[in-house]
Image 1 (tube, rainbow, N blue to C red):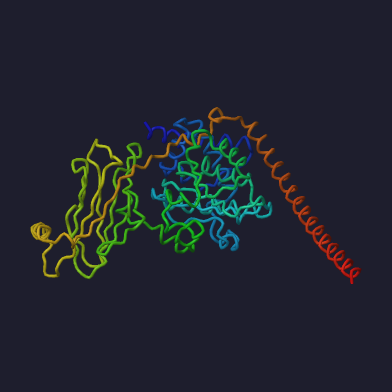
Image 2 (image 1 turned 45 degrees about the vertical axis):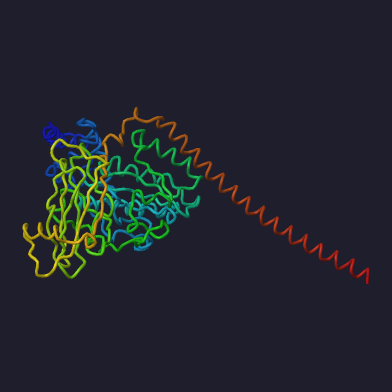
Length: 457
């Protein structure tokens, strides 16, 4: 069973740790806080075990590599003060907002990254700082990486940094990657991302989503997109505000909080258009509708569905006080599957202040309320596919290309980038020479015209 495998990993690790320590003649190979946490937190062990397909030896090797990295980067001691202030404020790497599946967005704005060995360690620490911060607050919940390549030039291409980010999700923070959304990728980077695909592995190619301004909203709502992507959200929120936004009400932890909002005259309804249900594999079959009364009177509401035999809606017929919110939990009956063809209808109408809100009063109210006084809003169903842990496998045979081939491509790409830069310099010199030649030609023509004019005079 999974529990016995977890126990086996925890039991075997100290012996293997001692062997490693003796072989390397070191006593501080790992951070003692990580070892202590490993022995107490079965969920942490399980995240590594699942990622290595329940193979204990492979899991221990992965833990060894991960723990050594955590020790080297001093991950447990990383704080805001550990990162240069300019890196935090420039807005190149940060957590902000959610995608349409409820996953936190991890933004990487490549335009602010210039390949520089002097600042590389600080940038890696910033990546580790945000991931560790998120992992401690939302243990096990995946993130969506947003690679914003808009306004990116050749100076921003840094394959070593990209490889580090991929390794973070392959080794150091397993099970945390939902998908990688790549926005506005220049054609010059096509070769680079072919190499990235070999690092991810063939099964993980489906996690790469190439987008532009026309389709980015398929993954992220406008309120969480910056203006240059066609959104209305802030580009980056302060760290203190990010802390507040990550506090989740305990009753909401069983399913994902809806994000987009439909602003009606009586109720604000969230989500705005689609109810997101987890797949059968993910186990997260519940969805949530949040109704907020924006009037000064009590609002009666009821929720109908095109498939009443498939869904349980609680509450389906009730009322909402002025300024208050009501959570409606929608869950399919056991054994029944969610269909994208299913629809939900939210109906709402304003009640008189003297009206009662009991079941009998509500039944009578819906019989008498005029049709033109009823607000209606429809919601579609959307099934969210679960992320398979095998999508980022470390096994060599899972890759289309060998490591040697990948390294060859990597070096060839670097040479290509350098050659392109030299060509750009040559083009700039040619343009300057052409401009100079044009200016001289114009002067010569002006001189010739003046000369013939004087002769004719």
